[in-house]
Image: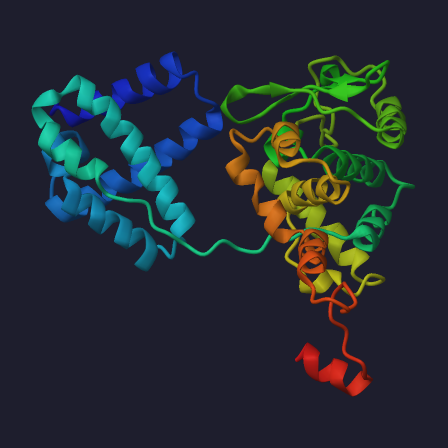
Length: 330
């Protein structure tokens, strides 16, 4: 084998699994990146993956691979950057194992991430939340499950991966009611629960009589944990139902992550500071959390009020006439 094959194997077994104790999700994402990269390199060089050397995966080839991801596979810049992040992580490891390839490694490490336009944060307002939570048919077991999981997601802002990983033993409904979740990087946190959420979850637990602490909090009919895909399908189904009575929902693309954004915006609307929201959501730094400041219309209105000319009425502009309002909305 060349220097590449054993180095890739050591990167996964030693660096990711043993040293970093990386999550299964991280390992799967890195694995998929290298599957794509090695197949691309095989097509470009004519060599089988086990025949490739580190110098075969030089900066021009990595650059061509990134272009291939966007132009052929249709990946967006965010996905492209995630793949590059996995490659950079490998080359940092390779730099320690194979200093003789320092020149190739340095050139690959110099490939920058691609700047891209950040999408506007999508979240639900109070009326949309009410409509969505009313959508499940709570006369059925599945309806009661779906209602409980959506209540929990909106109130705590947990990620879909954190939701699917919840076990019955992670729920504490006594004094200081909370759930225990394992987030990105295996970081533990314990979002507290409101009285309303405690009531919903307590009622749901009665549906799981005899359930053991290590069993899923929100199982399938067969007792298995829900998948990320299934949670997304549940949200989509109930959004479709809620859209019948809430006319603003069809204009929004709503995913499980939208419920996380909704929680953050509710906290922001109640003047919770960004640092606290970052801790609540399990963000590594507040840099990610600042997107909610940019999306908060109340914050912008307060800024406008402070800079309004003397004698001007503070607040958002409203067209004085129905026809003008129609034209303004175009």
